[in-house]
Image (tube, rainbow, N blue to C red):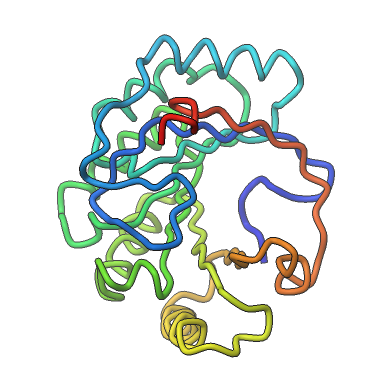
Length: 217
């Protein structure tokens, strides 16, 4: 079930604002990690968003990293800059802040300036760096602030036939037992198998903005 903006006939923007991350997941497509410093400048962020919005990508804006919440002040500035843009705004996060109480109030401030939802990544790859109780804490903080919450998990196979996928499936079951009203996104590392895993096809037109050219990775 998809509970954020991507779906049939939707168009939106995904913007990677940093490659800095406190995790080093083996499946990370951007090879993010603690050693990769830097974050997109605020006016550059706004200009790129405005241009694509004017080009017709208007349904949603996803802010991604790296881990955006390592730069909570910058996230606040980003959302302030695009506050008047009429699109659903999301942040993808690893939820490391789930047991940090101040983030309950930070999320409230972000919602007040336009944040619509949080997409929390958790699966076998992320479990090496955080635990399910921290993820539940992040979910609870987001829900308390009235934010849309989606859990995103990556699988290696379409039929959940390897140990890593079985563990991911067990994580999802535990979370579903506690939270019935959140969304779920399942992706497959093998893109050729992804549609079979998801059991549906989307017709999403999405533009991706990179913080830096991937040739520099």
